Image 1 (cartoon, one colour):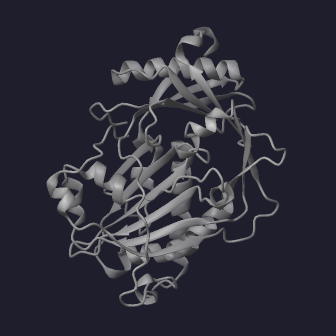
Image 2 (image 1 turned 120 degrees about the vertical axis):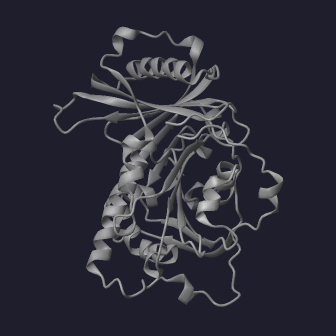
Image 3 (image 1 turned 45 degrees about the vertical axis):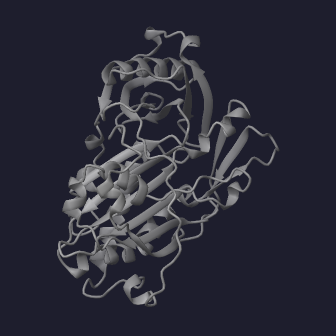
Length: 390
């Protein structure tokens, strides 16, 4: 995972022509979700909402080379309209919306699979080649500002705000190439969950390509649909291009998910992350705790000095996971098995927020007995130090 990136550009970067938006679409699940699924979100106190928990999200940018028209970003984005819809039918919460709980409790929310849809944006960057962009000194800041899209959730109108965005930025140059930017609310999924979804999506995508005549363009081919001179107005919103540093750990087997054990696991992993990154977590951090069923996410404030670490309660081996181990760099190929030439991955904790973040989700193996599982722990430390890669 990339570490801190500058939120300011060099003179060369600030003077270059930026990508031009070409289209925006909404993709809904391929079939109506029935019955509707829900995920309960419980926050420790009403102040948690104002602290920016809704702004925390994961960003991923995947870069691909292309050599022919049928391998262009425009074509890939056209097929997204079908493949993404089928993938969302398998995980409809990604196309859902957040709403307040019907019981009126200000500390209770829920994500509902109402088939609201995922936003897809397409754009062209006619002044930049893929190879040149990847070599830019300001690449991290530029990709955070230009290659992913995010609009903060409106706390007064939760039900209208998407929680997942796909931004198909297309480099339509002589060297070819395109980038696919993903933004996902951490209320929906952690990095491992997003990686799993991306791999499943590309499997569906390639199956659809194999079943269709590849000599034909997709139905939603924006070059044919867009009227000449008709450029959509898409405000580029990037509230914070600074990247916190993060570590992902797995605690293997024989772990239950009661709150005391999870708090202890969070503390152990925070200390391990501090040691490996050579920096300190803020005294206050937010714990996102996903229950094994996936139907409930607890969000609570933690203070390092208040938590007594009980090492004996955290059984199993703690192992650091690298982003490459999640398979995104090798398995997420949208065209003929072509893997990305580069993958960027970072967590944005929102603007003007210095609190740390710990996410815990269950981890289990197919060979495990019921109830015999481990947990994945992601520790995010807000800092502006030199980048660290996972």
